[in-house]
Image (cartoon, rainbow, N blue to C red; front, side):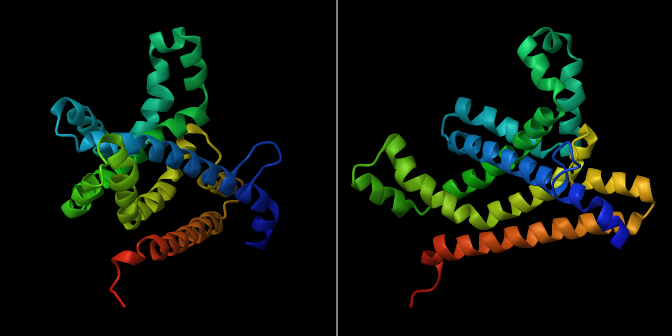
Length: 236
């Protein structure tokens, strides 16, 4: 174990001397996917609860599609499937984008987490207290102002416990990134195992890294819930 750590602690944490690897790569994938997914999911969640079927149904189809298929398959389609289409290779911009494993991986992760996050936020919007919305309307808030100042802030706060689960699941889902040759924590563990045949130690270190990050994320979300969901607690 000590010899393995002496040789591979840098690749496990941040770099193999040439490329970013291990924990740093995993956190980059997680952060990029969550940021893109979060930003896109806000307008999509509003569309998801729209009374107009032609606004609601396309978003509903997208969320069902990406929640109903494995992330592993979605990554394979983004990484190898799309690039196999001649029309994609014929376009310089698309050709450059889909030739890059990192771009394909982040795209697949972002589309996947966005689908789940959209449903989480849409559920929070539906569960809002009707009186809260009516009070906002009484103050003259309508249209985009109603969503910007009342509905979405309230929905995002109420979504914290559910969204924290999605973040943890997304962290664990980054383990499929090695399929696209992205050197995340699991890829480093597989390389260490292949080189040393220390299977238990190699994957044990990877498990401890994921466990540590998970506990850190859970702690951060608990602090956020205490701050932004305190109004839902019992009155003193």
